[in-house]
Image (cartoon, rainbow, N blue to C red; front, side):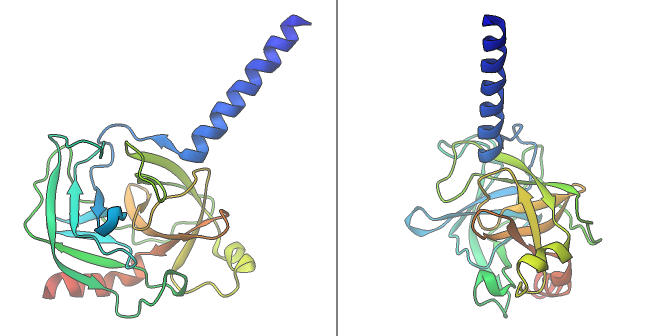
Length: 228
């Protein structure tokens, strides 16, 4: 009987630990996502972002950062791997009004070029459609209150048909993804096949996360980056 009680207790502890770990995501392997950026704004507001060219960072249009930190794992103290930049230009998608209306995409031109190394690197875009059921990932420092270290969680892409059946008024170019994590922060990159596929935009009642699908915006992205 004691043996059975011990076994049940062990199973409960394992289940509890696994669930809590999933709800908060897991700590990312140090510098395993060298494209991730930490964006600092006014009044301790922060967002996620990602480096898409040596002097360009992509994030959500709802963000308005003043400083971009690249190469970070821990954000509570400065690390030798950090590269810090001020923002030179903000290029918000012209049709953005609010996250739920879509077009939640912003390009930041940095004052200077990032140096590519093992801590800081650009990420390319996933141009092909990723089917429902695909396991992708999201990385960032948390939701509303930043965690001490970079977190990473698995995101499973939800079929668009299923998503639209729950949210018939869903804006164009939004992807639904289900994650065990408590959520990313605006601007965190959704990465599929080691390429940037989406930008975390918002969450509805903790069900799925909604991500801006990057591929449809690439003509605009290329135009901005060439002309700026």
